[in-house]
Length: 88
Image 1 (cartoon, rainbow, N blue to C red):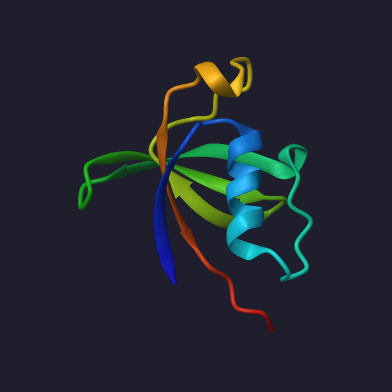
Image 2 (cartoon, rainbow, N blue to C red):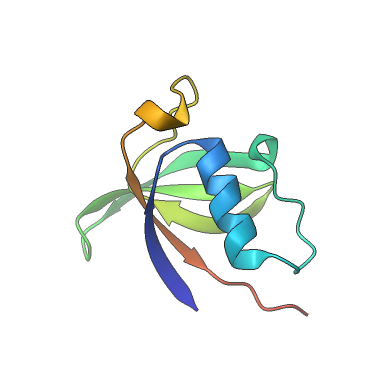
């Protein structure tokens, strides 16, 4: 299942969002395990796209890089699209 949410573009906010969505599936979701890397421009949606990696696993896409130096309360928002994993 794909969901799109507007969150703050920080490792902490992304980790919390993924914990809320994937809770109980056995993933270690901590801010230090989150990486966000440029992925390319998606013409279908008009976004510069960044891939969100949880360790080495692709877990979501976002329309902006993360802002690690800003406190969460002052960071602008970003759109995050995630695909809920199924437990195998």
